Length: 492
Image (cartoon, rainbow, N blue to C red; front, side):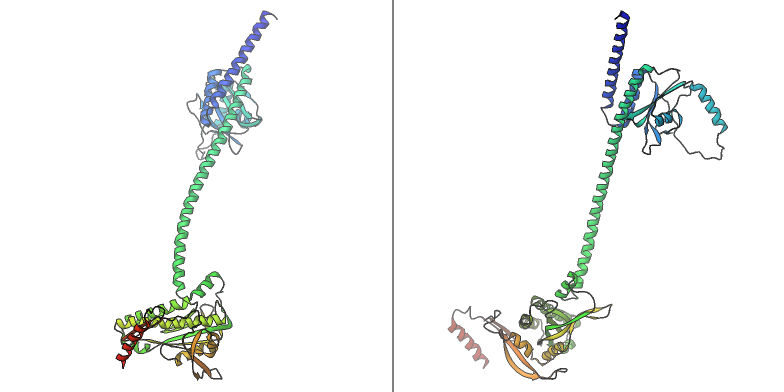
């Protein structure tokens, strides 16, 4: 090898080392960030530093893949960020289309020719031209080089260089510039994807925030609406017996005209002397008294599982066996037990009313009958009434009218169902309209000793006398008998 060959080889080796050093430096700079602008600016500054490219720009392919858009410029007075170049138009556009490097020289002569053409086809003053961002350029440019920025042969953008000198591009630098352009393309694409992901995350966070706000508002609206519905349902519940209300809202009972015949035990009660009382009391006091009475009776009816059909002034109609039934015997027992508890409660109410100055206390008459009745929704398509009708209801009402004050009169049908646990006194037969035979009646006197509801405790109260008797609590029978004798002697 001659000295000349050795010198040439050494120069080539030095150049390659320098190229590798440049590639490493530029790669190190652009890999420090994922910011598009920072990467593009680093590339352009490096191009001037290593290759003396004083006027350059980078354009990226937009989402439509039909246009290139300027994202960074170097050395121009007007930056022109956002200026667009269509694919296939001009030097930059053709480079993007063909993905091939292009060099242009003698641009001065070409620009003069283009200016003349523009003057000939200049639009009239009436023509409205849309505002566009101008592409940066030198007025006295003599040469231009445009290099496609590729990543695995996929176009990312174009790197363009202009100069007022004729030859600015050393062909020996072509390979390294292409490598740097492609490295930058790779960095820009990663940065673009990163920005898209960041934007997606921001949009997602915004959507989550909006959704959370919507959920909060929705929960608030649902809570408000639920409260309204609960308030409404509580108001509606006052117009229905609890069993009927529950059956409607659970879907077990259709809200339509439908009836059925089934065995029921019907209870009817009325206050004796109430009409006379209405003439003597102020409306407000009368309303308070009646409300207290009906409230206490309703609580007892509900506790025993009765369906409150309706209130007719001071009268109460309750039936057992629909919409739920525990069996004919159990329904009859519950009804009679309810009536007994009502009488006990009424006795306490009478005492309270007397303390308020009501000299003439109210007494209740009660009638009970067990038999087949028609029950269900009656009425029109627009307004329904859940009730019971038939001879069984009429018979219960007739039993009530034949009952004595604060007594329970039941039919023989009911008596046969409850006689094992209820003590009854046989009373007279009565005739009822619609029934061809006389009805034997029985008066309820309490629970039998064999009944699970039987209690030896006795609580009674009348004007001037209150009696509480519980043999299980008496410790001295002789003393108790002496006390009773003293009371009896004073009554003689």
